[in-house]
Length: 199
Image (cartoon, rainbow, N blue to C red; front, top):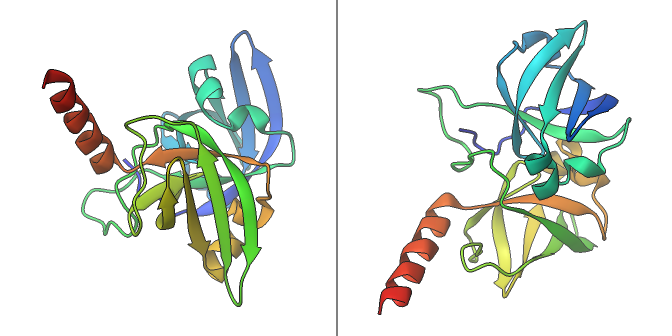
């Protein structure tokens, strides 16, 4: 489990394809603290550390992960948001994030405001993928509060700290992002859908 509070960014140093899998080698300020078999969220997608060498570590994404996330868009030199799993007994500063990306969304507009940024997104319709104003959503692993919400679109506001310390500073109109919708909202949507189907 994760919280959506990004620890640092990692830089993609090497990409190797092997069958349907892709091995990503990254460097980061927390590389020396990682261990093999450890779970780390990369742009919100939970991946397992499979090897380490010097200041780099490697994770493997299988075809299922690549097809549902924006990890297939990564190139050498790109940056990703990193978060290690939550420690039991620590404060939950963001919201409950599983590290299971529901789908990718598209950034449709970036507004530079007076001291903040507003990012607009759209995504494919799905009865279980909903947003509500002031609810939570996870974008590229970042726990955020929804500002505006309508049918298959929503927006979030980014403060300067988040803009500086996550990949939001690189995000532009037309870029794909990983979306994980609020787990409580998904359960409610599923239960309501089942109830309607049975009536």
